[in-house]
Length: 83
Image (cartoon, rainbow, N blue to C red; front, side, top):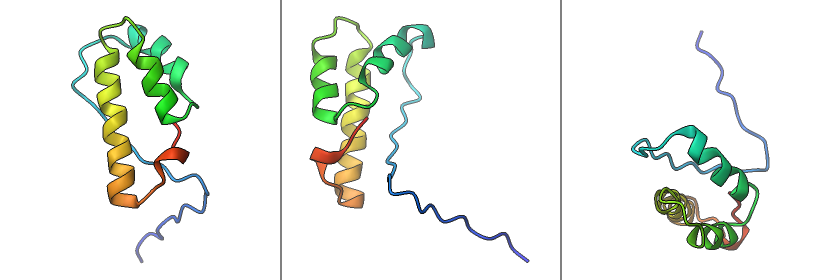
């Protein structure tokens, strides 16, 4: 009597990239992250490049890692990926 596995039938496929080593407070991260959520990846990375905050470099690296994982591991189209 094992548990039944839940199958995600949602059309939105999720790729995660988690960076636990960011040394910044949530109070400083949230305004930056609210500005890029829902945008396409190339637009979000472009917005982060022009930000003057120090932490945006780490956020860009994490987003680029998630895009690389989506492309190589799951064969997703990069142009359709959103943050």
